[in-house]
Length: 218
Ligand code: CO
Image 1 (spheres, protein in one colour):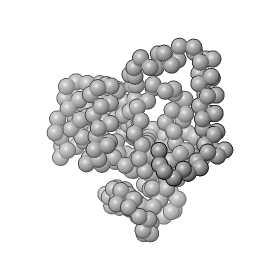
Image 2: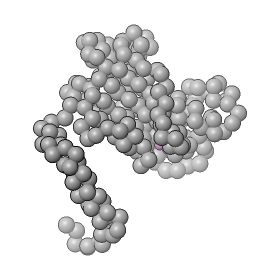
Image 3: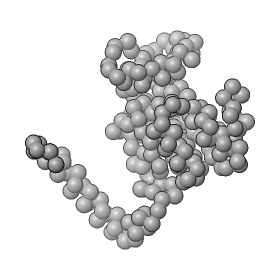
């Protein structure tokens, strides 16, 4: 408790707690054993790596429930091989939870990707978004050929999700799982804020044969 009391209660804050009570009631009405079952343990079949954007919540947009998806989110759903947070989540979900699918889900209109397309300094986040500039650079020919700025933005969102999925499969974690014969698929998706529809980028990988030789460690 801090010495200085800051008034935190307001309509928004109260609404969250009331919302929780309403939700609990709703869930118990639908399934009286809902919380008993969930409190016994989790066995989600999916790991979701998505953007922190408040408009892209994994469960709601896939019509799933608590217990269905293990979630990792960061700004612009960037997957970097030195990110201990992401690696810990990936390791735990693949080796302990034994998820069957890892989905990297980007979204059109992503502010992080947009910032990476510009030349304005935002702050520390510029260093995080540098990874997306790398995606741009790796696909410079394709990007430069797109004349329309909005289309270029959309395409970088797609390429960033595809690169994220590729970085997931290039980890020692996923390659070891595959070399042991574990069933695991890695996917890239992009969600539309405008329609609510998810686009499967159809770059799904399921075995070591899909790994570029330069990245093989399994
Ligand atoms: Co975003």
